Length: 282
Image (cartoon, rainbow, N blue to C red; front, side):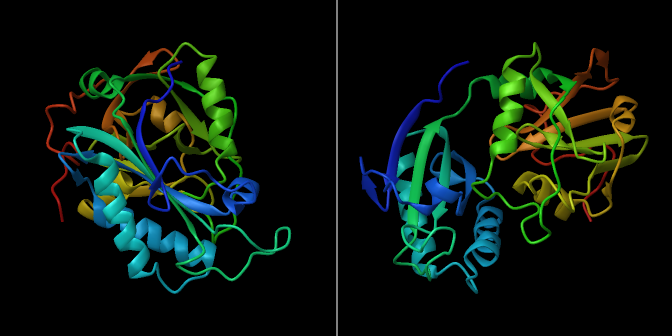
C-alpha cells in the first residue's frame, strides 16, 4: 500500500504548525471534514461541500450556521494549498479545538475551532478505475447503526472505515461492498453505491448508517426518481449494472462482485459527469 503524497497543509492558516495534544478532534473525534477534488483551482461540487460543513456544524457544534468568517478562511486556505496543481485532492477538517473537561465540550465559536486544510496528490488509480471499473467483494466487517442526529454525517469518528480499509488491504480486490447490521447494502469502503435493475436505479437509504456523499447528493438532486431502499446484497448481485462514487473518483463501475461479473461496465472517463443510463434529469 502506498502512502498518500501530501503537497501542502495549513493549520489555522499556518504551514508547518502542530496540532495541540489536547485538541478535541484528536482526543474525542470532536469535529468533521470533507474531501474535495480540485481541478485548475476550482473545487468540484463546492456548494454541496459547503452544505455538508454547514450541516455538520449545526449537528456537532450546535451552531446555527458555519460563520461566514470561517468559511471565508477555508476558501482562502483551500486556494493557497491547491495553487499550482492541475488536479489534486484537498481535505478540510474542523475540530472544536482545545478546552472543556473530559467529554464535556467548551462553548465553541469561530475563534476557538481548529481548521486544517490539506492538499494531496490525486490518486492515479482512479483514472484506470473510471475506464475499466472495479472488482469488488463482500466485506466481513459491517457497519453499526448511528444516532439519527449523526447518521450520514462525515464526522471524525471513522474507526469503522479504518477497520474496513484494513480488511481491504488483506483481500485481493479493488473495493469492498459493506452491509449494515441488518444485512442490507450500505456503501463501499469509501464511497456510495448505486445499481440498476431494468429501467430503475437504486441506492441505499442510509437512514441509520453510512455517509451521505456529495456525489450521491448531486445524483439524487438531478434524478429524484432514484429509489432509496434497504436492499439485501442479492439485489446488487443480480443488477444489470452498478457503480461506486465519491467526490474524488466520481463514478466507477462495479465490474464484479465476489467473482460474478455484472453485465454492464461503463467507461465513466468518457461519460458526462453525474450520468445515469436510461434516466433524464427532472
